[in-house]
Length: 379
Ligand SMILES: *Cc1c(COP(=O)(O)O)cnc(C)c1O
Picture 1 (cartoon, helix red, strand yellow):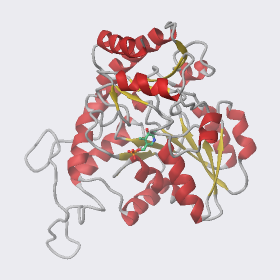
Picture 2 (cartoon, rainbow, N blue to C red; picture 1 turned 90 degrees about the vertical axis):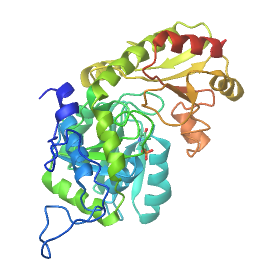
Picture 3 (cartoon, helix red, strand yellow; picture 1 turned 180 degrees about the vertical axis):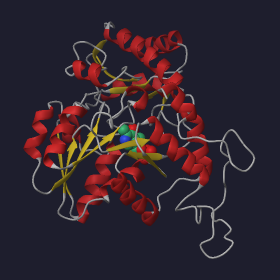
Picture 4 (spheres, rainbow, N blue to C red; picture 1 turned 90 degrees about the horizontal axis):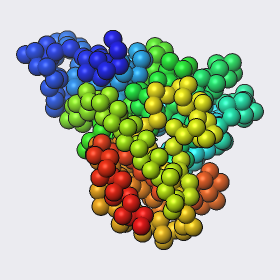
């Protein structure tokens, strides 16, 4: 089955009760048993729920994996991955990272004795220098947030295999429409399904997909034992979102490209970060591992400071000033004061997240309206 069919049919079957084409929202916590243990595969909804199961099978299908798991948020999904580890274990992580992931690693798990090394991974060969006998996991986010760096998943997967370390990739920005990390050698794919998979800014959810059965069993155990699952209504919404993922992503890419080029040619713009430009430092890897460049763009206005950047985002009318990304509507954000405020200023400026950086999540509106909106705000 090809991707554009998998988004609609992958892992799905009509509901066995009445043939409902969309899985019903099984709003139930428990399931009747005829005799103790005599049930139809569902006992309690933290463990299993039919609506969530339909979604988890869809996750597995679109990421070319075998096992999907849905969580109450993207961070809950990451939390489950780190719980594969124990005190003394080490993680080598991308340094240009979603702020909440950084906070979870440093403010929660470091306290439990897990060590995190945050490094630039633009050159995959560097990564091996940071792997020790205690390293159990490599955490990659690509494209990175918000600097749009590209990390060579295949190159890092070779190192991970050689050193017997798990490789997890946060695929939130790219989505499987553009990039399939399991095919490139990763062991775990993670999503904030809140973003493109849900796609309509109406739900918070996380996802994991793996191929290996033993790893899947351990993660299902953690999902049930820690209990950070999502509800059936949210499962339904994300399943519905995924059915249009491919056509939304196509338009996100088209609009993203037009806006990146508009900004790059603009006399008042200093710098534009978008992996589709030939002079992007890892453009070749982006071309090799992605099927397009998506709708995320960051830029720095010329001679700009904190106040000027805030002025631009406040003056936008169609772009909404908001956290998050990946919905049908265009959003603008100011990472230094919003998504990345939990990262210390020197740490974030090292990776390029300066006070004047603006991040756009380009939606699927008419691109002429979006460009006109940016033009009036920049002027
Ligand atoms: C939003 C986001 C997360 C966290 O997901 P939540 O659903 O907000 O918990 C993790 N990684 C990336 C890249 C994100 O954009």
